[in-house]
Each structure stands twice: as structure tokens, then as C-alpha cells.
Image 1 (cartoon, one colour):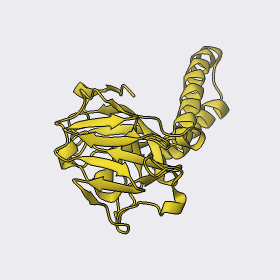
Image 2 (image 1 turned 180 degrees about the vertical axis):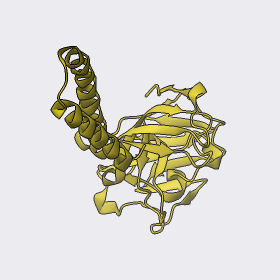
Image 3 (image 1 turned 45 degrees about the vertical axis):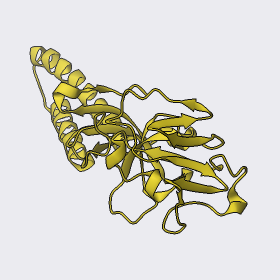
Length: 228
């Protein structure tokens, strides 16, 4: 339901409520309609809260591709908390929606794999953060490329990403040339070898995050919250 449709439903409840409130009625009818008014009041309040949530706090997000399989499937529909990242920084392993640092008419959804200040590399199919290989039961298959962050560059299979088009900040923006710089994140799809992510377009700036994907409500057989 779109915000406009929800608003129309709320207005309908309000009109019915006003009609009931102003219509003359016998005593018995009055008790019945009093109960009806209470239910309608609850619907109006709930609808108003839902409208505020949809407009300012949460949004729906449709999965158009297989880049996050097996965690997210094509045609899944999610609820995304757009308020959280206004007050908190993205955390490791969260699934996040963001505006990609490459030309695109759509938002992207990937997993936060590296945060500012961390060392990050990929070797022999393993993601290594701060010297520790991650256990990743959620991925489709191990990455078939190696990657390292050093000399203020992102190096994939021995070749540095070019900036532009990749988002790799100039050396002056790095606090340490072998760690993710402040204000930037490393994003990856769970379908590692079929994902247009940070190993192609570089870091994601903090300002481009849209929201934290929290809950899948479609299809019904896959309803549920995410682990991170």
C-alpha cells in the first residue's frame, strides 16, 4: 500500500467516524455505535502511525537481481529502516540499502563487510578483516578473486582499481594506507562472483547509505528478520 492509498483509507475512516458521531440515535443504538467509534478511533490512530512510518522511517525494497543470493532472492520484498543510519553508523555484516557510487537509477543492496579503520583483504576465497578470516555461511560461493588494501589503493588480482571510475579517495584522505579510510565502507554481495560491489566500484561513502534492511515480508514462506 502506498502512502497515498493509506492516506485515503485514513480519510475514509475519519468521514465514517464523523457521520457516526453526528447522527441522532436511540439509547441502545448509542451503546453499539459507541463501541464502533472506539474501533474506528483505533484504526485511525493506527493508520496515522503507519503513514508516518512509511513516510519517514521505513520503506519497502524490491530485490531485482541475484547479487545477494542465497540470503535474498529475486522478487523478495523487504522493509528498510531509513531512520537508523541517521543516528548510528552502519555495522559489520548488516545488510544495507544505499545509493551506489556509479551511475544508476536504482538503489543497491549489499552487506557491510569492512568499516573505517579496519584492515581488509580477500585471499584464497576467504574474507580477512583485521587479520581474521570470517566464517561466512550466508554466501553463495567463495570469491574467485584476491583483493588487498595497501598503498592507499584497492588492488584486485594484482591490479589497482582506477579512480575514477572507482571510488578510491586520494592519499590525503587516508589515515593509514593499509586501512579503510574514515567515512568509507567496503560493501559486498553474498553472491560474491555475481555482484557489482566494492571490488569493482571501490568504497562506499558514508553519506550514500539509505537504510538498514531489517525484515522480509514477501514471499510468505520466507517472512522473517535478518540475523544482522
